[in-house]
Length: 206
Length: 206
Image (cartoon, rainbow over the protein chains, first blue to last red):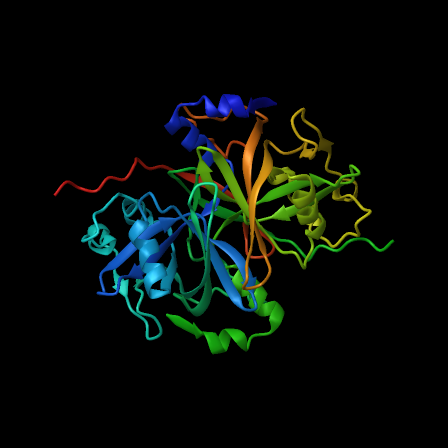
């Protein structure tokens, strides 16, 4: 084993440490958060921190870094209480990655990247038309982390839009059929192949 | 687009909805959380919710569901303040999945699954010897979600152990070389192939 203690980690160059630490959590989902402000100006932010929180009620969480790029997105979520989560497939990788650049407030990442805003009937937040898996959310709670000021956002699912029906008989979605990508570290994109599903794990009777 | 509104989601069978909603966040990381209680009894819990929180200080978050399987793990994290995160590679899929069964408190998932506990010098929590990427953490804060009682746990990295040096020149780890797997939904395991890294996204000058 190669062992890095905390002293060695803290002594690393800032960018080197960021690339390394961002790699430690394993493969991550790639999602674009769509919002609009109270004047209808749209915004997009690429995130790799979406997590399942619960299914009854249906809840999804994600982390936002207030001091970096998706600042407008967090402000929009907090002020309007609405946002969308749009899964990134292989065709969307280049524009999705480009959306992570630091655009000024008056620039919509939709215009800057060529992705298309699409509005449903339920929310004022825009969906990404190109995404094969789109989730509409209403903010239910948020928690600011004392450690570094990041904000954990929890939203309740109000709408779900699928480009094609990839549901198995039991509700499981075939994300490979949707051609979704994963992210590793800060900037690597990957396409997963299935090793199959496993049956529900049970402890042996004693 | 196939459109599911909230009424339709709420009307679904409970297990069907759980499988569907668990699929919505995209590909997820597979990690085993290693803990021990104050008497030294070890525990393992499979999680798919690890997220990057920050790199200076180095922080990782994950969600725990207090009312389901990893209950002992959450109790151990809160009482000892220490835990490990161990990435799951392809060889570990069967024992890692088996660890998600509902074992009684006196059973260690290490014994039940055949995975090996390994202790470092810094923490009392056990690492999983088979894992090629092991992170030692100290609890720094936790947040109970009002929505459903889940607990968001934030830990500070105190140690990092790698089975082989898969660092790129800039600190990025090659997780494919470590043969790590991803999870989709409740029970699908996947092996990702790289589409390459992208350069840092910059907004065009106006």
